[in-house]
Length: 135
Length: 496
Image (cartoon, rainbow over all chains, first blue to last red; front, side):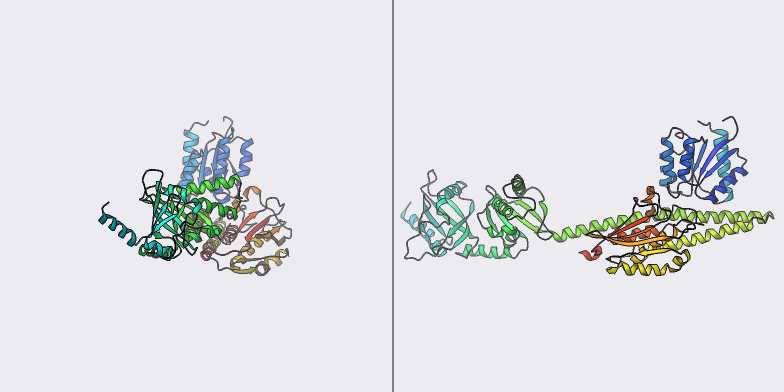
């Protein structure tokens, strides 16, 4: 996109975690337009009509969970190849492999330190914004 | 034959301990030895009877056929004594002249199968019969050529069902099966129908299949039997009828245990997954906010400290509630209930007492209809009611007084316990999911407090009573939960 910031949708029911992420991206100076959505169904509806460059997706959410949303997104033309990065508190091997099997581009475990969040935001920015070529 | 040889043969014939009969071509008795005279109660002064076979009319054909098998083979034959009484014995039938047509036959009785003893050998057979009768498993020997019964013990006869009156030496297995069909033993199989014919053929095929491990089937009053056929060295079929009810019941108990174990494993897996997630979130928050507090204090920024501390406090409160719910869930989830007759009416009024304060504060309207009795654990059922009613009160529209209706329904074999409300309702998509541990549809705890254990607990209690719970998705806009209980229930452990 030439006309400005890349758009990131963050899907997470935990408002506190969402704030940590936004804050970390802000502190890392990432040129991102972040939209926080707190449930999968709202995210699903919005992603159906609006273009986002990246999706940051939690797994364990009330109602429809992140894994179900990921599967749904991959069947849709608009979001079939949009980079989806899972950010979950689960370090469970099953969740991780299932996420990749369902088409996730990366998987990160939610950090529990400020430093961890900083590393995540910086790493994300350096790779996805500076290095990777978007579809 | 020399004179000495003739004397020897005559003496042997006379003194042989086995009853021997010599007949003419028509099967009429020509001569009997001493043992035979005793066995057939022939008084010495009386002429030998015309025939000693129970069915003289068939004698010609029968003797000719049996002799054809060779003198080595013994066959079951029914005889008639002079006083008219009948008995079964195994006997060899030997043609007097080897070339056809036979001039007559020698019938040598070997062992008695029923109706009194005659001769040492026969006495021995009798002892063997008596011994076999003491065995609790059915035992019989059948002729392989025509499926005729050669011998059987008491248990075999008893296990032939209502047809047992017709069971005797010489009858065919087919006639026993047909008699049972006539007496209506097999449900859905009527005499003279094609089903009956194929049933007979299938049973005969099972009987003749001596290579398999036999078949297991149900008979009288839920008992199970294994029917086996074995081929003897001498070419007969040994049929065994073994009662395997205990084994079958143990198998079923084991299968039930396996299902229960699987259920527990699933619960445990879910428990693990959710504990790792739901307990980790507040922990992570505590770690983050305390780190932020440290940073701010070091840098002399004090304005946000109270907010951070408040977040930490909220996280610890949430963790505490989670841990308490988990403890409650794990205690109940694996408890085996003590079962007695419980009035759901009483259970509900106790549950309402516990919720009294809440009901008063919310100014809720609770309507309790007629409720049935069920078999179960009163303490667990109270928790079930308390959780369902508590949810109905909790998930109401803000600012609106909750309305809850509790009633029962008789569904024949089962009863239903129903709790419905006029609250915010549940999306039908989540009709199953809501019963998983820690599944919450509302993350915002400032409006609806909860840890997501309640409904999984209710489900677990319903299942431990052999019941089930469902969300009635046809009902709306509020929520209606229907718990189904069997009218009569015993816990698995006591069932056998």
